[in-house]
Image (cartoon, rainbow, N blue to C red; front, side, top):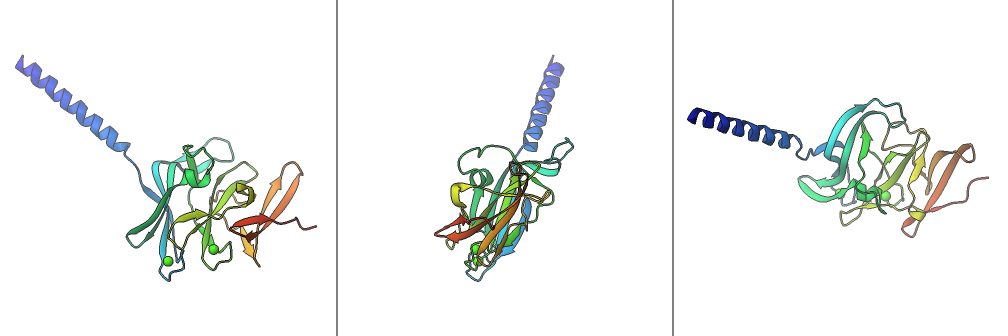
Amino acid sequence: MSYLNALIMALVLWFSFMAGAASAGHAPTQVVIASAQADLDGDGRSETLEVVLVQGRRFLDPEPWCGAGDKWEGTFALRVRRGEALLDQRAWGELFYPSGNAEELAFFWVPLTLVLADYNGDGRPDFNLGAYGSCNANLYRLFTLTPQGRLAELPVQGGRALAVSGAGRNNSTPLIRAEDGVLSHTYYDNTRGREITARYRWQEGRFILLAPKP
Ligand SMILES: [Ca+2]
Ligand SMILES: [Ca+2]
């Protein structure tokens, strides 16, 4: 009888050990999937911008759709550090879906290379980051670090995201351009059956859509 008790005890211990091991496997992942260094707030010191997989996985999505491929999937955060000091960390869902859907699983294709550029012409680098939109276009938003060291969107009139066609599997793209004070991006317009270049000017804290070129 005592032998049976010992066996049961051993089994209980073994199962609880295995349960612990399994739950440890589902602990928050916290993988830095992309990073860039720049003086983002213009104080003369360099900051590190990171895209962090908070929880999720990397996998090869073999399904026949335009969002397929090698990617990170899950919940993400953007993080800015100066050395070891954390300046700001924000959930990607809240930054990209300011009006909701923040809990939706996101994905970023591998590799993710952050594209920095001064979009609003204030002399400090900004960056774009986006999501798969459709077979025709990905959707991007522009972000910056405020002089107070906070991550913030550079908003576009109407709260819209920028549709970019031909960006491929790049969740940050060089195809959003800022030249001579004009921001531009090109997308394929299904309803008109042709490519449209949208142009904006930075005015009073947001990008205002300019009339299309004739
Ligand atoms: Ca700085
Ligand atoms: Ca800027």
